Amino acid sequence: MSAHDIESYPGELAMLRGLVRVIRTIAMHSDIDELRRVLAEHEIDEQAAYSARDEKATVAAATATPPPFIENARVRALHEAMIANPGEWRVGAARRVLLAAGFTGLGRNSASQYLKALVALGLATAHGPDDARFYTLSTTGKDGRA
Image 1 (cartoon, one colour):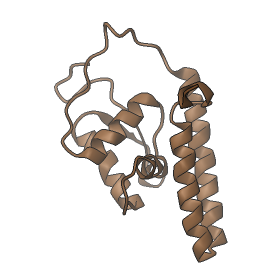
Image 2 (spheres, helix red, strand yellow; image 1 turned 180 degrees about the vertical axis):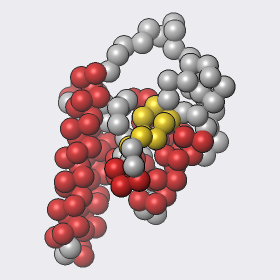
Image 3 (spheres, one colour; image 1 turned 90 degrees about the horizontal axis):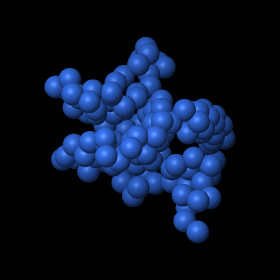
Image 4 (cartoon, helix red, strand yellow; image 1 turned 45 degrees about the vertical axis):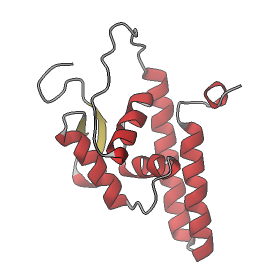
């Protein structure tokens, strides 16, 4: 049995592993307010993942286009995670996925920059105001092709 067979949504295990790492760090510093914030953010991200799972359309492999080459490993990993879990992506979810993938020394600002890099490449679209920004996969690339 693979993780895919027991996950409620694709990437759930990676998201939970990232959350556990963050909670361990918070526990060492005894910051209960930060713990509450992280858990609330996780709840939002988890609900978005469930929604994305429910709305995800299946694309036939014959019509799928190969993913573009992305030089930066963190940006590439984030793009792959967004493909595996389409829907609304926020900075916290991006950070947790990258931490779970083994990228260390990663703050919210860095995760935000990687999401913005995907927008610059035409692979993601930013939505909403600065204080409620989320990102989704683009339906077309920079050149206008799907």
